[in-house]
Image 1: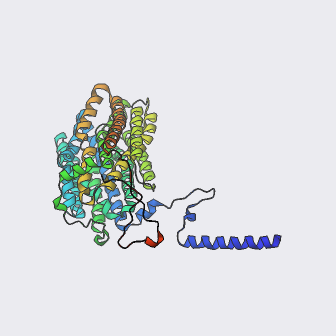
Image 2 (image 1 turned 90 degrees about the horizontal axis):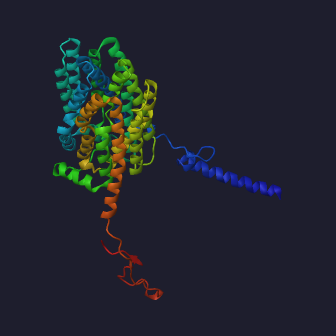
Length: 479
């Protein structure tokens, strides 16, 4: 009998192995199981990077953004040198660079919906490269002054305002919708890789060669992004097929946002976070120089620490299978606000640098979650305009927030500007979530009692009668 049992067990084992082999060829579920019963998800990052158009676009953006962050860091240091370490001057510079987002950002969204995005990006990226080249030449030749820096910052901001909606919305045309959330996170990851590398390299380059060469390096970096855009295959783009783009207006975008909680909440939260919380371009330089009495290299290390934390958060978001949710956004925003406030209380340079790592992680989780929710819930024909509204509140609040941060820093100290920005961000997430959730609940129609209808006939001889359409047993009245 034992032999018989052994044969039957072996047969069952062989049958099981055959079934598993068939599942393996079909990409079955068991391939995602490790020892111990834990699932192993396939690499979402590698799968998303498999799209040729998206990969080329991402590489070009990475190289260009490294140069852009080098220029931003060098530009702040240049203004501090020209003004004798004035926090207000840096705040004005930042405001002028982001003011065009407030003035022209929505127009950029209209252009992004009505014209081919790749063609628009080729124009705006070329204009930004020319601006960097002019700034570099003026600085190297010694002809630069504060007003030239202000004027060129405003011109760069104008080109960026027209570029940003198309650049962000263009991601949805480079990848299929199933991987759009991962693509948004990867796009954020390259942005934060650049933010980690750019200021650190800029700090060392400025210390060794001055600010002028940094601006010239940034001008050359735009050649990479232009090459990436030119070599994208147009027949592989996921462009919307709706030809009636001109029939919709900005008012349609605002109505859609107001009527969709999954759009309204992330955009309103980002409005407060972008205005008061995400001013690290100003606060880090002020803390490094006015609080810790450090130089340009130390400032670069602080910026790199914040960006490394942001990179970890972006890569973590890129590997997620589940779509972004309101709960994740609110939790990340509250955590970010707390960490930013705690950063303002750090007593020394080392502890301040350490707290910037988790602060950067939380900040990029907030922005990538809000960005992904905005793109996923936006109608394709309105995506450029809805993204322009998102970017307006994210970057357009900086002309208000940056001078305010500089004023608070000059009056109460750089630490207090961090504490205030973090407190406003966390409180805004809690209050807005409660208000919008309450509005959604109160706007739902009251439940109506269910009514019953007569059951279908049970006489087999009478079933089914010609022309008889059975009604469901329970039917809810029409709203």
